Length: 140
Ligand SMILES: [Zn+2]
Image 1 (spheres, rainbow, N blue to C red):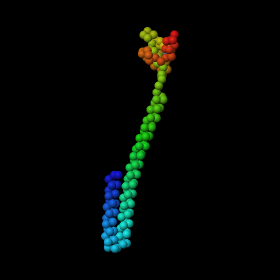
Image 2: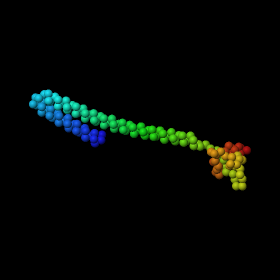
Image 3: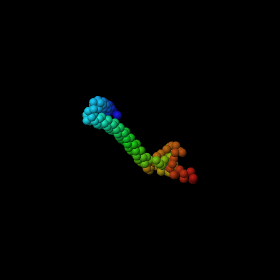
């Protein structure tokens, strides 16, 4: 509830109490029609004050709900983007052994590095080699 809503609540409540007080005065003087009219005014003020409070609560809840929804959408879109990234990122590539000094051929499969595909890589680190030619060489 913001300050304007609080001010409206207080204003309506004070007006309602004032009407009730005046209604009591008229009731004591036995001027019943005026007392009844002021009593109805009191009820209207109380109802309006409750209405202001209810609307303020609804607005507050709606604002928080919207924020929560937006955040959920942001999270979902980020997850989707990351998932796409993972799909397109090379998760498994063939790694070939770097040709030794003085040779233009990769020892793993006997091809030249120029024959590699875009996602294939070279390494000088033996255990990182995943070229199927390595296994054949090991078995041979
Ligand atoms: Zn190879």
